[in-house]
Image (cartoon, rainbow, N blue to C red):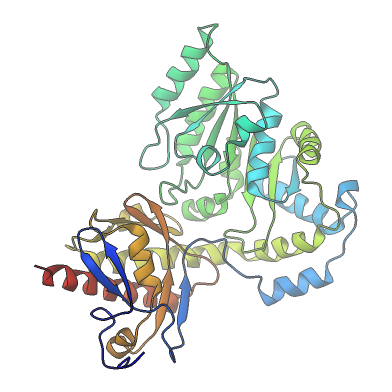
Length: 408
């Protein structure tokens, strides 16, 4: 504790941690005494808190038993979203993961049916293999391209190969993800969606879109959401991401599909009662979602451009602004600095930082891959927060580089 004010947080911290290739890098305390931190949380767009208008709407929501179809707020939400997406009907569910699983179970009702999707698709990687565990559906994965698409040639070859052999599982469904999370929020082009649709119709397959962030895609393309969903048989939409609601998602499609989806939702335990309390928050978020997402995209691009300038030529971290199309920024980290370690440094705050910058800023990012980390913009991140995050990245990388060059 003694000499706290004199010693360098990098040179003599009580917390030391080895960073591969950098030796023993001294890390400052996460919560130094007497320092109040400003937190910029960019781990995900799911970390938002309900706005005052959302809380008021939730408190005053007219409710009923949604399992009986009697919750007026949920019914309104389903009508609003079905119209927004140009679908016949929609069904409110607890999560987008459940919405995706319901869609697969409705489209693939034969055990052993096959779904074609990208190797890095959220459904395949982050949803605990529900399509196999619960639905009894076989996943055939294809290579994801950097822009979030799959090769149409490879897709058709997979379908053709299965159709001409009695030994292969029979593909029944193609799953797309828009925007594509693992590709850094990339938007699937409309012409690509049209080509996939044509291919699916040619072979009698259906298309489900994991559209958790599809409103981001619509805003980025400058089109109505229905112009995207028209190429799909079903689509999911998450309310706890860009919309900013505390919970909930929706599955939209044809009337027959949604009727079956209600039955599957019940099977999975997703039937809720006075769910209008949640639906009310989603309606508030949807009422100004376009404005919100435009701001999020602008802030993400501003950060990417600024961070690119401050990391240009840096051997430790790089960002490609041209790959930032929506609210997600992926940064590539050099092998000598693990993404988790860089995230720790960005979150930590020291007296030295305050003395050097005049600010105490804790930035929370998410270690995404073996050599990458992710930042996601959302309603609770302002333009000022974005600038503070950029400044913090510059400060941390400068300190890392100084330490790296000073080590013999």
